[in-house]
Amino acid sequence: MSQTTYIAPVENFTGKISSRNADGRIIVSRRKCYGKDAKGRPVYGPGETYVYHRHEGKWSEGATNNRLLFQQVQTLAKQELSDPDRLAYWQPLFERQFKHPQPNQKRYTTLRGFVIAQLHQRMKP
Image (tube, rainbow, N blue to C red; front, side):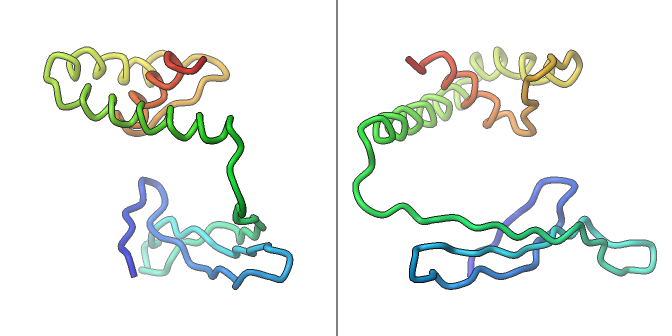
């Protein structure tokens, strides 16, 4: 089984994924663990249950184009963050989103995610 690292405040998840039903639905039940209290007991959030459907068949042209664009943006973000000059350009922009949050604008917790979102927004038709 693979290892997962969660960002704060989530320490881990507990739950299960059901097998696929005849109609293709997959039911997920989970609870987030936010760490331990002073006595060492886990602090759990509320239980969550949701259903999703795994896509079957061919993807639409629009979905395929979006996936290709996202792949290109990820590659470009990796190049941007490996260049020290570009990294120096992105770092203050990333930190500014915390100091001066804009209404109705998502705040990104990682520099990589922030750069991907900004590049995707610029390249999206």
